[in-house]
Length: 354
Image (cartoon, rainbow, N blue to C red; front, side):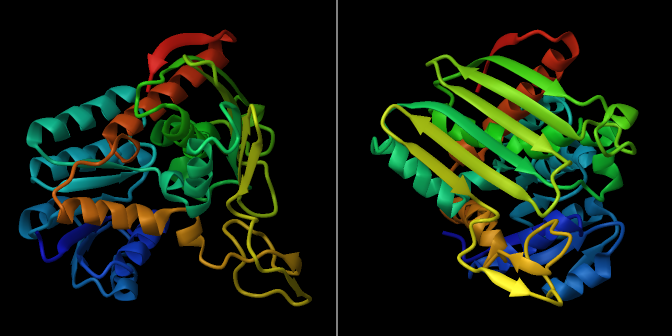
């Protein structure tokens, strides 16, 4: 067994921060290098990363890395993943796996050919609350699941790459709604055995056809319905029109009960503040008045356990499970593409995804 896992991060902004924070909590994860085109030195100093590179390809050639965390804008996921695979590194790629299903399949297939592991960064599969919900479902606590309603929503992205559907792959549906898509496949998909056979999508039109964000070429509001071959339905939502902080909720309806989970506003803390304070939850515009501040946001959303799982797989030389690997990432982007197709045609799209 390896003594430690040597890790390089590509990227230095939001996703890179929670990757670095989570790796630092694992005693056998070693952050050895980071590559980025801006914010490089401040990021490396914050996380005490010894080697910095302005070119990630130099990092791949000069460092002896076991794992590469891909934390760059969506349109660069495929490029960086393929380069890391060619360098013989295992890869953890943030969501979505790519901006197109063709690129996603190419990433997965190249990693298989090169004999490296491709991990897909769906943190919801590792959220403590959602893992407990899954356990209750599996023991029959709510009978047979019939319907899931799940959403990730907030007041909009600040990234210029996420605002442009060419570099994002779409808008709020692919950027936010992909979380509930991935988790529904994890809960109901039975590791790919229970396929999604029909999807419907409805979105705003981008730019002046958006509700609020007229500078976003992708949609600022999106809904999708997934119909599984075993009969279950799942309604997913991703929007940029929700003010007051990031709102992540999951409801599971079964023949014998209901589970309701609040990932972002379910804090055990209630605070009333006249002047406000530094931080409550992601995307909260104010901390004045009554708030529910996160206790450990990265842990609650699943990042800490997700990255620990990746490190442990490498230490133990294990392949990722379906719900943490490239197959899930491919299925997610294929389903999102089908939702966009349905939105365009105003018809349901049939297929087999999962």
